[in-house]
Length: 593
Image (cartoon, rainbow, N blue to C red):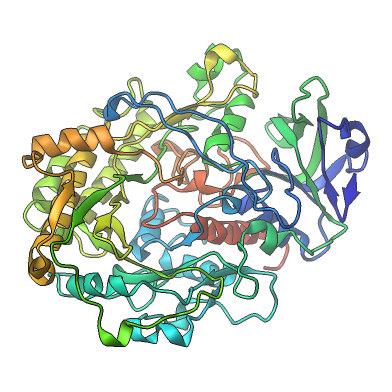
């Protein structure tokens, strides 16, 4: 069944043979993954009409009017640093990917996050740049900000349109929208946080600056519906040169003399019906930080010893594939109760009608010297002095150790600085917090199971390895102590808060550390880093141009390219990366950007 370029494959209805005949044998570009990055790049490469583009997605195109809710069914390996607990690996399995199922919180990282990406390029002299100034250009291109409603003016909601793109009049874009409902209970937290030593108020949530900020959601301001990669980069385009093949598994990349020549595919659940789609220009991996390394490894690109144990012929020995895995970790609750509830000022004691755009949330993003003014130097020195191999997986390749050492040097420096976040938290209006360790120093792995060989139906082994480096526990302990000080001293002390969780009995750093290990969740569903943009001699997988080392015609454009995670939800950054990637691909093809 083909509708406006969609080839919707249903293994249950037996439609694959008829549908596969509807697609071409060869495309200029084949994109593996129809998620946040894949559809963005597909839109940009097909918009001129000069190139044929096929996006292949394992999930389905959900019917209009239904909220996509499909997730992969993956469970992590036991996390040794978190008392050997296992966790769900929740990533989108649907057209739109994780942008279709996430919590819609829309944030940017700090400016320094992207400057660090530039540092981790190894001083590459090419004209390709990765830094805040360059990324801001792509943030502006990829996202349209909707200004807050007048009703929010009383809350001192600050924003600045210079950090955003032009005001489009079409619905065909990705929106960052302020809701017009803000809880007046957040006022006390806002006023108290403003007065903390070292705290700033950010001029805009997209400014790249730390401090207090109201942030948006990925909501269409005209309809109140989710704004995601499908609505922004697929629905309504109806281009003859832009095809979407759903419910289809990419088994592996096909090479011809170390050049990506195509992909081998089969319909979901029917692995005996394999066929090959050829490519003229480039195969583009956008399968996400869990499945991009899996596809690379099954195609013979990855750690040679792993591939040999799995019986997979080695195309390129690239040790970094599947390493450098990162995600934000969080503590589900640090909560208090008031003896006296903070009063709501008269000017905020108003009723605002929810117009369907949801709430605007207040949060803070702060550096380690603000979180722990008495201990940040000690923590930085302790981390800086570590042997970089000590807390990485046993047998880690020396190139990966070298790259981690570079990250270690940068993070130790930034632990002492004033413009690199180590804590994000949101004020809901109630005296309860979910502190997020925004720049963990532990590194995990996403590796195929060698016992499964080349069977792509077997999900990769996802090992978060959260808290494998004790520095992350040290930072989490300091974050809890920061929240305690915030609630019981200064402006909020008059309300006599009592701690409920962790509660009495967790006073020493040792006791708090044990509580952290027992309660921390290793994922905020922001997996990144498994095909990192770093020099090959540092364990990198792709160069500054996002091309995979050792082969031609193969690039990575999703969150797996991030060498370090950013201080915010990752979807907005993935959109910007995809926009930049599309320009890089066009330049390679000799197309004017």
